[in-house]
Amino acid sequence: MNTSISNDSLNIAKSKLLEPWNITENIISNAINSMMTKNVDYADMYFQHSSQESWSLEEGIVKNGNFSISNGVGIRALSGERTAFAYSDSLSYDDIINSAKTVRTITNSGTNGSRIYVKPSKIQEVNNLYSNYSPMDSMETGQKIFLLEKIERIARKLSPNVSQVMASLSSERDIVVIAGSDGRFISDVRPLVRVSITVIAESKGRREIGRSGGGARTDLLYFSDEILTSYVKQAVNEALINLEATSAPAGEMTVVLGNGWPGILLHEAVGHGLEGDFNRKGSSIFSGRLGDKVASKDVTVIDDGTIPNRRGSLNIDDEGNITKKNILIENGVLKGYMHDIMNSNLMGVLPTGNGRRESFAHIPLPRMTNTYMLGGMSDPKEIISSVKKGLYAVNFAGGQVDITSGKFVFSASEAYIIENGKIINPVKGATIIGNGPDVMQQISMIGNDLALDSGVGVCGKDGQSIPVGVGMPTVRIEKLTVGGTG
Image 1 (cartoon, rainbow, N blue to C red):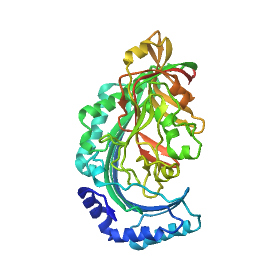
Image 2 (image 1 turned 30 degrees about the vertical axis):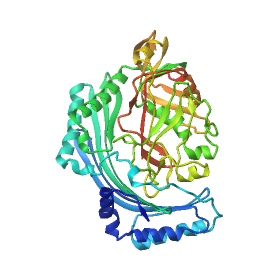
Image 3 (image 1 turned 135 degrees about the vertical axis):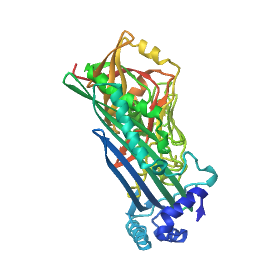
Image 4 (image 1 turned 120 degrees about the horizontal axis):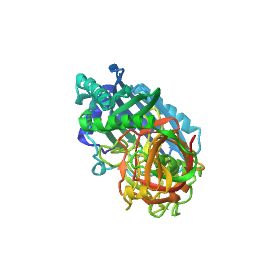
C-alpha cells in the first residue's frame, strides 16, 4: 500500500483511530482486496474518529455542556454508476471484515463496471491549511463559560432594547484515514470551531430577532474580544433595524446584494447546479453547457477548498483527493463542474477534490467547499447611487432552489429600500425570487469589496450536512422579483 500521509497526521491517526482497535495496514489491504471482484471498479475505506464539545447560554446562564466521541468506518465499492456501501460504528476486526463482505455481496449482484483510474495522492502535494491540534483543549472550561457570558454582557450594553440573548460555543476535531484500491492511504486531522448568537429586541410591544456568528478551522482562541464584539453588534443591529422596518414592497425591481454572506444565494442558485452528479445525469440547467456563456461577462465564480483556516476548506476531500481552487465560471463562460471520484470517471475527467461526506455513515457526493464570486471594479457606494429605485439586501436567512429549473426563493433578514441612489428605510418580509442562470446574466455592476462569510455556512444535500463557505462582492442585479407585503 502506497502510504501518502504526513508524520504528525499519521501519529495522531494511529494513536486515536487505528491502534486502539488493533487496525493495521495489512488488515485494511485485505478488506479492500476482498471487495475487488470482476464487477468492481474501485473500492475504499473511510475511518473516522470524531470528538465534539458544545456549550450554550440562555437567560444569562450557561445551561448546557456536552461532549461526545464517535468512531466508525464507511466501506464502499463502485461499479459503473452503482455504489455498494456499508458502515460500522465499531472498528473491530470482525465488524470491518463483515462490512466488506456485505459490500462484496452487493457488488456481485451487478454487472461489470468501467475500470477507474484515480491518480494517487502524493505526500508532497498535500495541503497544509490548518493545524491538527484539538480545539477543545485550547481553553479551560471556565474560559469557555466566561466567553459566553461576555457575549451576554456586550449585547445588553449595546442597547436597552435587548431582552434576550442566546449563544452557543462549539468545537470539534475529526481524524480521518482514507484507503483505496489504487494504493492510497492518507489521513487528515480537522479542527473546527463556531460561535452562534441570537438576540431578541423589544420596543413598543414589538419583538424582532437578530442572528450572527462565525468560526474557522482553528482553536477557540480565534474568538478574540474584537471578533466577538463584531458578532454581537451584527446580531443586535439586525434586531434593532427590524424593529423599525416597514413591510417590503412587491414586484420586479433592481436589487443590490451586499457582500459576504449574501453569497449564499450564489451557492444555492448556481453552485449546486455545477455539481458533477446533477450534470452527469442531465438534471441540472447547466448540463452539457461547458464553454457556453452562462453569466455576465464580468462574472467569475470559483470554488476553493484551499483557503487556510476557512470553514469550508480541507487538506484532502473525503475520498483522499487534494482539494483545489476550481474555476467554475470565468468571465461569464462555464469552465467546469465539481467532481468526486465516481462522477469524474463516468464523465471522463479527473476528480476536482470535491468528494465530501457528512460522516463515515454516509457516501461521498460532489459538494462545494468555499464558493465565491470575484470582485469587480465598482465602488459599492457607486453601485448604490446608481439605483433609482430598488432593494438593498444585506443579509439572508434561508432559501431553496430547484436544480432542474434553477429557480430559487430566498428570505432577506436585513434589507432596505433604495430611492434616487440613497438608502432610505429598512424593510422586512422581503423574499428574492428568480432563476440562477438568468440572475447571472442580469448582473450589471460588481463591487471591489469581495468578502467571505464569517464562517457559519452549512450545506444540505441528500440528507447530508457539511460545513461550507460562501462569498461575493456587492453586486447590482437589474431585474429580480421581490415578494413582500407592502
